[in-house]
Amino acid sequence: AQSVTQPDIHITVSEGASLELRCNYSYGATPYLFWYVQSPGQGLQLLLKYFSGDTLVQGIKGFEAEFKRSQSSFNLRKPSVHWSDAAEYFCAVALTDSWGKFQFGAGTQVVVTP
Amino acid sequence: DVKVTQSSRYLVKRTGEKVFLECVQDMDHENMFWYRQDPGLGLRLIYFSYDVKMKEKGDIPEGYSVSREKKERFSLILESASTNQTSMYLCASSDTRAGGTDTQYFGPGTRLTVL
Image (cartoon, rainbow over all chains, first blue to last red; front, side, top):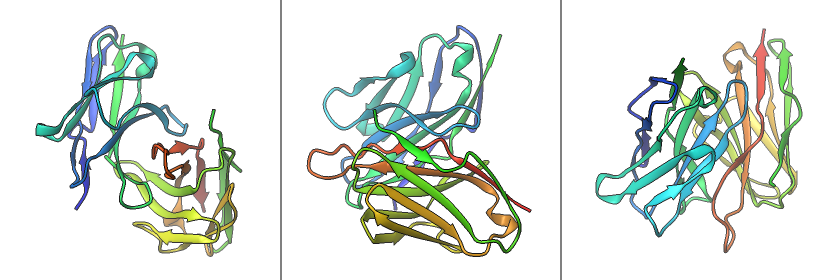
């Protein structure tokens, strides 16, 4: 069965420090992978996506993610966190053989301290 | 830019009421989705639609129904609201036709409270 795992429910990081959010997936076909961010009380905003090609993808707000097929991972990184990055982050895989349904991870809550 | 709008940001209803949540997208997308989001559970798919008048159950359809009479509009209906349906409801749309990228675009969400 398809699944997406975000091992870290909650991460606290200091402003200016680097951030890495982990995502592991289980999916038989070639995955389409996404990271979304949700600010408090808001909908989900797309940060970046991977379909094929270069395994290091750049997104908005200075985020990047690296697809590693051998590890079934798609980890999100940012070199220097800003206070405005405090939010919840969701990893998702598109089930391309099922009308584009998504399987979401449970989310990682990021807290940024001064 | 894709725009997905939801009829209400906040809604308060009483147990037993019939509740309608409306979602409209402006990008001619084939697919539309309704999710509920609860702390610690992430997003769970309630229903989705891949064409006008077509619908499929998601992971948690019990207590909900949907309607898609026009391509741009997808409604979620709570026939008889219950307190355990208090949640954040998110609508999304995507285009998976040839050349589509499967990216789902989300509305701002409706925070529903059932008293």
